[in-house]
Amino acid sequence: MASQHRSGCPINLTLEILGDSWSLLVIRDVMFGNRRHFNELLGKSEEGIASNILTARLRRLVANGLLTRAPDKHHKQRRIFSLTERAIQLVPVLATMGAWGSEHLPVTPELSIRAKILAEGGPELWEAFMDELREQHLGIVRPPGTPSVFDRLELAYRSMISEC
Figure 1: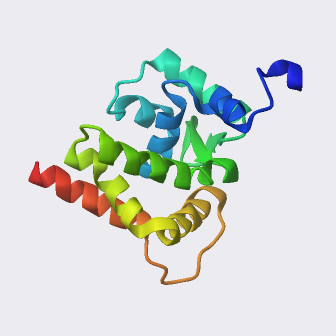
Figure 2 (figure 1 turned 90 degrees about the horizontal axis):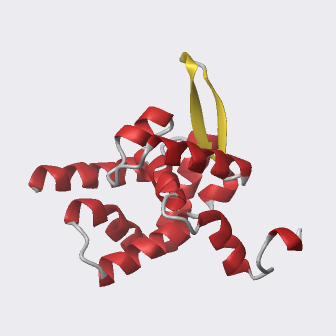
């Protein structure tokens, strides 16, 4: 295994899987945008990913155990992508990256609102969001009446869009 990688450093190994220009953005779109099909990921990407790049990244993320690909029971010819537990555990990483970017880079209000809410909510909100993602992607049921973090983030995003 060591011969397949530049080193056994955990940062290096993580970057070998997630360090390209698109992998974290694909995970972001599945995680925060609930984009689960190829055409949704292709057509709704703010950054305009090319279809061949998206295909390659999806294959790579599946091969590395961050996404699963399964037939969509509602559309016979479509496949649905789901986050795995490994990908769900990236929520704190993405929340921290979003907070850092919001602090130090020229972000837009509508695309940074989710990062702001996650930063303000901290680890407790991240855990609640991770539990919700486990329910959506892994089928692990949350207690009834549990507030939706996804809906909160989406509502804030939609509100910012309407203001801009």
